[in-house]
Length: 290
Ligand SMILES: Nc1ncnc2c1ncn2[C@@H]1O[C@H](COP(=O)(O)OP(=O)(O)OP(=O)(O)O)[C@@H](O)[C@H]1O
Ligand SMILES: [Mg+2]
Image 1 (cartoon, rainbow, N blue to C red):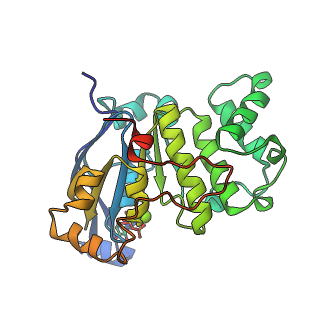
Image 2 (image 1 turned 90 degrees about the horizontal axis):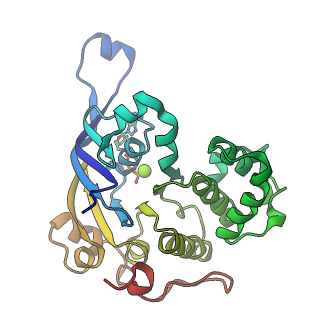
């Protein structure tokens, strides 16, 4: 039996608040963003992370991707402590967990063409120069874009195209775990559908493990096999996505679902899509028969 690919064990994270004066006066101004969070993510899981604003979702993502260190507890990748992996040699580990951000326009360098941006990422992975051009075309194809996009600068792309480039750049590293922090909330509904369908296809085809942070329960229902509900820095409920959304046990989850306009959280039909993007049809389509 194989263990979880990503684990959080009793992870807490606090931030100091207030100015220097407060700290000099030794006022306890620490804000606990995560409190004793434990979570196991199995290989191939597609985990939706939901919860109100400020509940600690992005903080959790930042710890999992190594942008920050936990105040206490451990983050493990394949059973190995991330802190230790980072200490030994950050490079290989950094490749294994990749992140896609909400607003790819700020995540992409405005002065670098798509091809250059992807080429530099491939170089980081150690892909020899002669192979990079064909890998760039492969990556663009993977995210449903043509090679003509290569010479373009980020501002010459649509929002949906930019988000796909953000995704292509993350995939260029051949990550085992992809963390997408509200990757579609800056997009309109039809572009959202494109990116969600793409993520759905990639998780199936590449066997990618995905942590999908979103406020949209309908998207989580469409895409995810598991769901984690967060509130005030803690996990209040987790389990198979449909079980939790259809039979929420915790009052907070019940309230979260009740807050969605009627019908939307239960949306099972495919989202509107453009003809060039494959549509996930059923749950089995997305996750394979159980
Ligand atoms: N670098 C930081 N310094 C100080 N406080 C922070 C920092 N990052 C996050 N926080 C605080 O930690 C708490 C959790 O923030 P986090 O960004 O993880 O929430 P979130 O669930 O991602 O919210 P949203 O849905 O609005 O993106 C918030 O109260 C936030 O203000
Ligand atoms: Mg956030």
